[in-house]
Length: 279
Length: 101
Image 1 (spheres, helix red, strand yellow):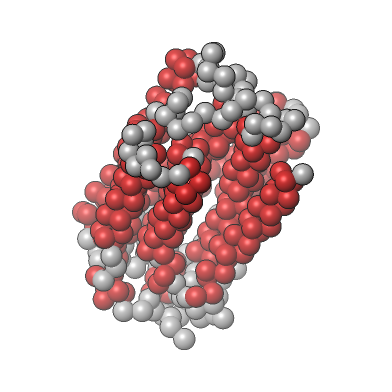
Image 2 (tube, rainbow over the protein chains, first blue to last red):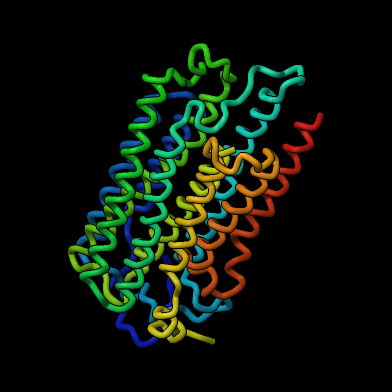
């Protein structure tokens, strides 16, 4: 990356790293594997990707966050007070808005087209709230995710006050809450799939529910769950770095960026909970 | 042009993280209450859906504004998620037109 040197900072080291390039190569190979339906190529791509990510994290763990990215060194530009990395994260989140909208929109279209009595494409009614899904349990899970958003923002506020003890405590709490959310979702999936018989192709026997109810449910909540998993991995990284003393009052932008992603995952869940479970 | 985060310590102390959390929890409780069988049976189906959409929008807006700090960022940054939402509006309009036929 080419940066102008921050005013008043000693440019003591090079900020470049070869690992992002390796990650990009891995993603490229994996993508070719997907579009050419080649599982071996996909696996090779995933291995290169995982190796690149591991190498980058290992390299990053060796030293504290670069002073260049500290809050006190925001770059003079036409876009005041927003660093390139935060801008990049917001752009990424804008693409995520479109991604989730496509998943939710297609599911809702299927619901309207095949779940509305009287239409020639009618394939059975959609399940009502509480008919198949455990709404109170998911309500609890929603509350857990909201709690994790609070602990995440408190972790950021703590390091901005230079309170490292609370910073570590809140990051660890966020990580544990995220793992709890995923555990409850895994438990729910297990109950629904093997207990209730809500599969990727069938609704529970005798329920009369539209067979598309299952696949749309798993597609929407599964894609969100994979995002939570990525968030938990990112949280594990910043938590580990925080416990190694990697963040200071001036240099902690990684925490803020992981926080942005984590809150976004919470926002998506707020809508998914309403659309999938309550409507 | 500001090169420092503006009066960071002062701003942080005034950020209403706990009230936002309480609001999120209360609204989630209300959402569960109006969809639990036997509670609020007088609510008509369509009205209940409209109410749920409004409540989830309020919750999401609070998280974006306060927890994602969009309220404290320069205004232009909000254009990025709004651009994403504009494309979502196009998608919704297209899907609605498709379903209507």
